[in-house]
Length: 548
Image (cartoon, rainbow, N blue to C red):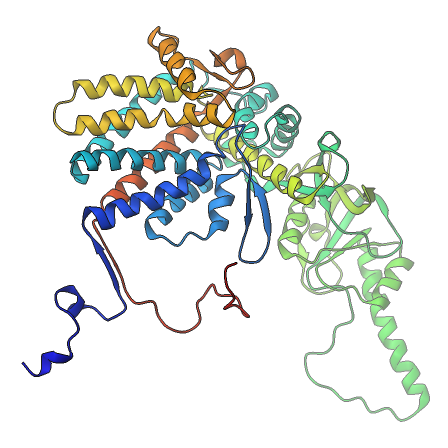
């Protein structure tokens, strides 16, 4: 027994390295996990819906976010708890798949877990809850199919009214009261860049340019690009221009190899400088002769090169970001050439006009392409502060993503919590027909849907109990489209209010949250190894300071 004296502890302690943490059993693991997820969903829940509150998040780089967009909030929070991370991943999956509804995903999952905790305290085993939840979600998806508005499956994605109808609720949940200004802008931009086959719509083709100053009503849509930089040189406006794009920069390049030049006399020195000039002039002249009127450079523009560009009346633009350069090539149909040389005719791009304009004290270069290649459209947003502009940009992103979703599947279902109450009502009826313990789980799943109307009405400052009971009463009478009118604080038919949600958004949000919940509930032990020594990956240099 001598050797065992050094062994620490007994049981699992003796098996793992010291410094590990091990939580097991219902109390420690399952309920702790549920608790963490509940905290996360409590954060996002108050931001749900049009009256959602804003959150002020300051991330580890000291950047300030003022937003009610759940995806941004949870991404910037850097959640550490493993179970809450699962919800964050579900929300992120929803954001990447659909681009809207991340808040519903996280808040609904939190609500389901809270109900699961009640069931566990009543004495149900987690696996029975999982079985019940799985049955409930498949039933929910069946019911969702029923609630789809008739005739909404075939829509013309180029019909502005239909597009705005489906986009309104997504934009309103971010910017309530401004959806009537924003939606037409977003719809216009999307319809301009929509390809022949709408299913191939690319979100990246709708750009957002944020310019401080003015108000939202000054915002416009530009066919083409808006670059936030001035033109280099004195030529500020060119019409119907051919464009040459040089990725490497417009300058005299040093030779690849080291070379030493021996100069004997003063004439040689003069000639040496002249040949350099002549060479640059020759290159610029070659570009001008090819018919190009605009040179776009991806890097610095040399002084001498600029001098000759002015002489040959070439407008010079500089785009430092290579992604922006690619988009520019897409807008104009140009091919980026690596080094300064004479471009072929097919490598030149074309734009109707390239002009430098001053918008609210900022000089921007507007590249317009009215006819043909409508490959990029830009929404120019105006607002008083950067935070407002960032939030407007998120609303536009949601609108664009919704457009992409409706190009693939345009079915719509009633919004404003009408769908949720109907789902709750039908699932309750379904749970009564079930025998076995999972009926309790199904009933709780049905109850969880009340979270949406409750949160919507609480965020709007209405009495949640009254609203939910009157919603149930209306739905029991067979009015399946009755939802909450948040402005007046009463229950109304949503088809008159024109509040519709996309079927795919709901479908994926509910599916992802049910999956995340089942994953969290399946965990019964958490074993964390001792964290590795050395500096943390996410620790900032000069860290080690206290949180406060």
